[in-house]
Image 1 (cartoon, rainbow, N blue to C red):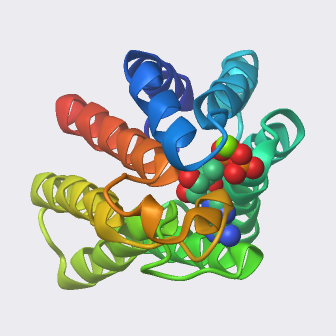
Image 2: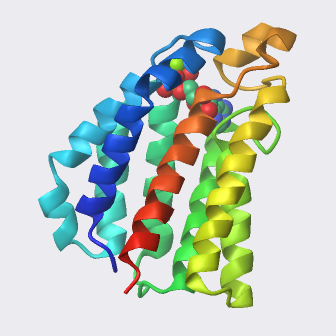
Length: 209
Ligand code: ADP
Ligand code: MG
């Protein structure tokens, strides 16, 4: 990986920690309240292996991340985030890390989450953040968008996608039990996905040589 995973994981850890109460409340209102603790358990397990992760090429690193999240997080989000990274690892296998390769790999990871969760855009889940970001990343890399602009675009798409869940009825996950009562509340997984993506884009913007 061109940037140390340890730095990205630490930055994500601290941003999720800063928003932990807010995310817990989001999942309490339309879920069961455990999303942020599930995620923080997964991130803590990644913190324990950052030295090892920094030594690995991207495909095995993504594999290790996926396996760690799968085995520590729990909840619907544990298997979905686990699937994202395991599928990215599979797609990255044997490829050099380039912008084009990464955009394809991320796209395929998000496709695998769609399949695993039997969900798509507009169902009030993490996918409402992940899909617009995957699409935009592919588009910008294909068009040769300048790096800093690309990072800005991805943050904007993550935020717009996350916010779009507010007015949706959920058709997947626990929030689907609430029907119309879920309207007016942002989905917790869409929010944490956006926070993580925006942390990464912020770190990469700062680290630009
Ligand atoms: P649980 O719902 O088992 O308590 P979490 O609270 O950790 O698990 O995660 C809930 C989040 O998982 C939701 O906010 C939503 O973003 C995401 N989610 C739930 N079901 C699906 C699904 N079928 N497809 C995509 N994302 C989903
Ligand atoms: Mg929950």
